[in-house]
Length: 474
Image 1 (cartoon, rainbow, N blue to C red):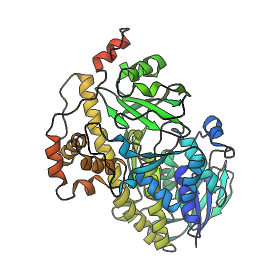
Image 2: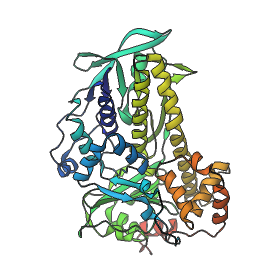
Image 3: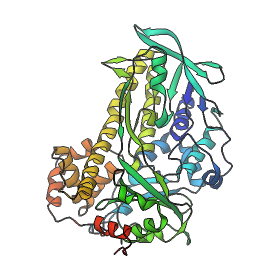
């Protein structure tokens, strides 16, 4: 078995470390943020200082696809989440009201997941990992160590150098440092080619508030998690211990709506959405939390068919990250962690084989989700941009975009089509897999021919009038 160091002690870094420890590897986790794991979930929410995680107290959601991986490979983490107040949530409860056929079917259990706020989810995985993994908090890495190349012209990483000068020599380094990973600069410093690095602004700004139930239950869902209105979207996610989050997100270029950070205006906009207003019926446990400037990023450690380095791989947000409004980050990270563990099991001791195998796995399993998220975001940005500019919306005409729009309309009326939609949204199957099923698109196009059901809510004109001091009409 191998000696492995994981850089980053967040949810995905610790999950990866646990998976590898249970394969028999000797794993050490190095986490830059100091301080011990809090003693309780409530303390984690109130006091845990995770400066290295920008979105630590922003909304998170573990999709059913991610839960299936967590429960299969790390069932003790699932149990710890539940003991910490996490709940079970069935995505089929989001089925639109026009659908009359609500009978349960074989296989519907696949749409169930567990929910929790990010500090509570990280508390759970850190509690379990702390029992069997060597975790060194408050430890900063300054660069990489190298040894004999495994292939001509390809540097081979043999460990890491810490900020205090200590050197750790291992068989494999895993970069789980998230969105802020400094790996490209470290690779340049050891003479490696820079990896593929595609980066761009996500283009959204977010305004979130968390609530706790006064009566002990979560608000009922009258539509899906994510609702798109004229020039903003509204995201409502269940948490743990009868908490939930409500997020308004807008285009980051829409300067007029940046006043949504004002709690009164924020609440007025949510209250003006009839299917969502009841999410205000709880005790606010935070102020309005703004977040912006997040990047979409994709990094690949193979260039022109050749690894730029061996002895190190990236996982989770360190490999790719996107706009978080679809809530895919944790699930994508768990998919990547599980795939990384499989590749290490198959290629342990073969640095070139591991580098190539990890690249193939990442490109096959993870990159399609990254590209799909970018496509969804581009379409939403065009819709919002058309509202801001007061012009017709230029919808993408590619077949995949047409199919995506048709599916979103058709799932309002057909229980089977809604399940197909929920498989994609829950990351149980890729859009290509679902939409490629024989006969499905014919059924989708038939159902999509019906007139759309618009979500009731304020227009951009309504919002601008509110900003000017006029009452906001519901």
